[in-house]
Amino acid sequence: MIDIQHIFKSFDGRLILDDISLVFEEGKTNLVIGSSGSGKTVLMKCLVSLYQVDQGKILYDGRDFTESSEEEKREIRKDFGMVFQGGALFDSQTVAENVAFPLEMFSVMQHSEIRDRVDFCLNRVNLSAAHDLYPSQISGGMKKRVAIARAIALNPKYLFCDEPNSGLDPKTSIVIDNLIQEITEEFNITTVINTHDMNSVLEIGQKIIYLNKGKKWWEGDKNSILETDNAEVNDFVYASELFKRIRRASHS
Amino acid sequence: MAVFQSLGHYFLFVWTVFSKPQQWRRFWKQWLYEVNSLGINSLPIIAIISMFIGAALTIQTAYNIDSPFIPLYAVGLATRDSIILEFSPTIISLILAGKVGSSIASELGTMRVTEQIDALEIMGVNSSSFLVLPKIIAALFINPFLVIISMFIGITGGWIFGVLAGVVSTTEFVYGIQSFFQPFYITYALVKTVVFAFLITSISSYFGYYAQGGALEVGSSSTKAVVYSSIFVLILNYLLTQILLS
Image 1 (cartoon, rainbow over the protein chains, first blue to last red):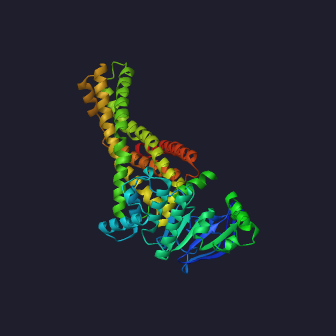
Image 2: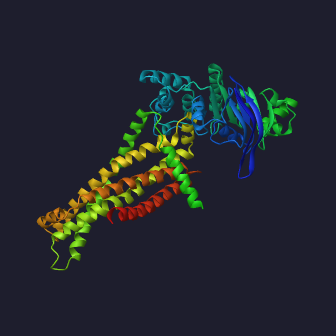
Image 3: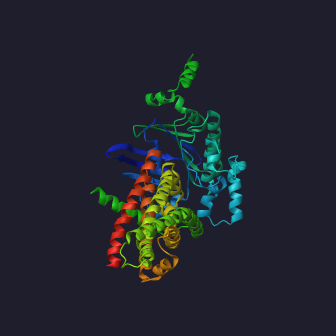
């Protein structure tokens, strides 16, 4: 569980996160949604300490991350897995070497055990055939799946996904969404996903936080988001022509 | 004020780089890779430049000696001292600042803008130490060898082309390079080389590591890396010469 208590973050006097308090629950896919510039990415970067919060606390299962020293943060981060928007795979390493990287760095596994674990993770994301390929030789969707495999290699307690569907076609997006949800439930991970893809929201939104102008504007799940009377959330949800038509069809 | 801020930021960066590697096996693997990438791969360009600069130095020296009181073996002596004292340690370092410096800055800059460095940090890796320390240690190790090879090729080039051009004979040239030799010159050259190796790798890594934005900014950080490395190599060249030779 990740407990965020009254965090503030500003850049050059401009307030980006304004008194955000929320809880991301264990074993659930927690989605943070909001339009561009709403503060989603800054919130995620604060969660993983790529940015320092100005005020407030972030607790990982009771461990205060904001007050920790760099060394303690590094220890807590070993429980993190992160899937970046572009995958952030290491270009000079093959798919298998990318997945093996955290294991070689932080586990006491033998070579054969690492190989088995890499095989397991790549099988889990249906990419056993890409073992020896380099990131430049695989598609965007495959890169995301390799990034997921790398993120789960060390059995993380917390998984962060920054716009995992950006740049993917709808079918591949659903594959990625389902994969993240399955992994979250299978390994009882606290998963936080930044997205503005409404398909993801309706597919895997077990808990949804809507951010607007740096504030927590609304909280609910994939069922309640379609019925809320919050005007801003409705504007966001029904922004696309497809969703507008669905709404019109359901009302008629 | 901004200059002092940048200097402070650079020293803090160097401080974080020099921390104990989290995984020694991985460090030595990366170090070996960097020795090859930064050092061995630079050998062809160093060999070509050293050969022809040695040749030009010999011929220029010979043509500038028009007094009958200066013996011709002075051509070998002047070529040797110019190469050992200045050309090999300083000019080769400037060339490496261009070749290696831009490569380091663009590699790290690309890693930064594609979030690969963030990925390392989030995994719990001390990214600056993991990525930069092997480069610095590799350059400190391999650059002295490169400079010694450059000295050898430069002097050989001077001899071969000097003889081919007919400006000096083998006997005079070989006598010249053996005359009035001061072993301290080699120490001086190697001290300079080690200092320059540190400057080139750390300054270039600094600009690459803190690149922000996209392809344009990576290119700009690469340019800054080469410019600042070269400037600091020249400043330190003057200071070390003043300290070690005066």
